[in-house]
Image (cartoon, rainbow, N blue to C red; front, top):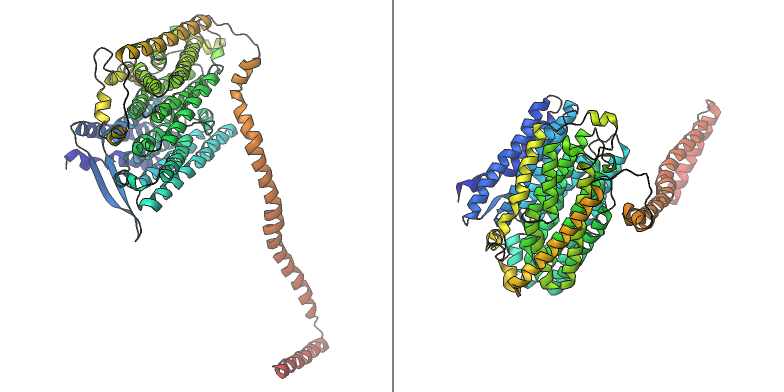
Length: 632
């Protein structure tokens, strides 16, 4: 066994150790030490992950068995880790981007009380541990443990500032909506175990021919329900924009490196199941594309800097599911990677802006920050170019790979996908222009305090900016500069079964150039239009009307859910509370107490203190005793 594989258990254990030290010792650990422990454990995990990646790149893979998690007569589930091409990519993303977010947090959260600061880093470490467990597990059960762990951590971190009631509501919303999806995942695992007697990846994927079409379709549909919750797809997407309630670095961690990528990883890992379930694949593609378009339209009219980025994440996740639905598994993983770079950069850049603006998040009250925050401005601009799909930035390569794969399946999918790309370019450069260009529209006090963020914030921004520029070059298609898709070659062993069953109809080079040119030209036109329209934006107190009002109010989806789901459920709960709890359970419990009380008051009357009454009672008792004996 390769020596580096002997250390893979340390990758998740180190962040777990950081969680325990900072969590249990939060009242004793200083801020400096909490930051060092929290960031250092993730950095060491990154170094080991990098060593593992290079070992896997040389052709080595590894499955490690540590102990039996479940061991009964009918079922044996091991606590096993699987290190291969797919998991090694995700390990680098989680630990690499996660480390930068930890470093950034040391400055961003510096005003917190020492014990709260340590608690925050404990939660971050637990989040990273859970996500690492999710991608390293060698079976669906270990994946599910990590799956639930990231759900718990999202609740803890979204509601970190728990004294704010709205933040608590947002945390509960995320937790509950994810439980809906998690039920689907759990049912799928039960279905697999009932049919194959195992949840181990290798055995399941090797035995897939034993499953009927109904089994495969049902299992993949239920797994997709789980992915809808974690990766925020219609109809379970509304929790993610509300997750902005947490600290900005948490938003970056959720949106870029951990939770929302879990659904993409799970489907990519289960690729052979989805390849053999064309009905499910079609559903995945349609839901993904619909989510991408819906979220993009909402982002057009949002004014909270973090809400724009949140709906952008929902939209980009939709593109990843579109890729999975058309069988472009490598394209989906590729976009996960590039998106991790530029979306982490966008959120951390937004945090830098909010930090400089003394907590202000409304872009209508910003403007002109370019001259005050040069590093934040340049890095944010690079991220905007990347997410808009401008060549040669990373997002260009991954986005166009997805659109090309969608065109192979259906030109209609491609056309709708391009419409989403146009909106992406528009709303991102609306955000950029209103934030950094034009004249400052905030208060004089805010302007007086404007400054560039400290190095603990700007250095992660610079590193992520570099990755946002060059990160896509590993996936340069052959048609472009005669490159080679090294990521596709690297992931080939993971998707080999699916590729063998999929009939390929590669596009001609001319068609690839045409599609690429059309999508880039359309996005560029939207970019230029947004720049010209909002670079000299003047704040006008005007209420949106018509479609603009609908988009500003997020298509009233939250209100719809509130009307058709939340209020009826609360009414039913209130009714059951009155009938069963207050009148039933409480009535029974209180009735017992009242009966005992009443009985004791009556029985005490027998204790009158009169001797004659006692003699009479004794005689009556003897008579009753003789009567009972007589009849028995």
